[in-house]
Length: 76
Image (cartoon, rainbow, N blue to C red; front, side, top):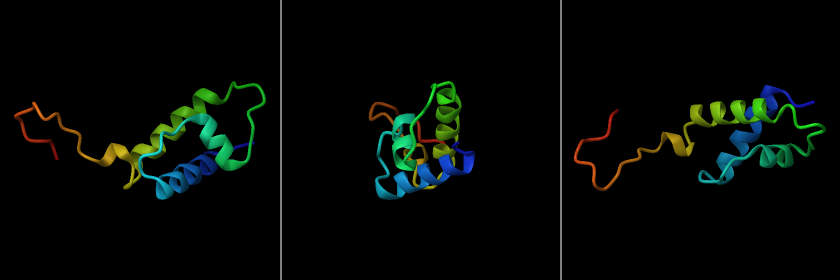
């Protein structure tokens, strides 16, 4: 069984190790040393993973993204 806290800790550990790592449910499972049994939890794992990743200060989502062709200043 994997808890939401386990997923949060895995995302945090992965982002600390490499802020630009591509997170996948499979990577979360491997980080936790687990294997999915039936796969029914994959959508929930993905949703929690993305949610925790967006909250983190070192997540790629927290870096400003701006097109070089965009004349408007980035929103704060």
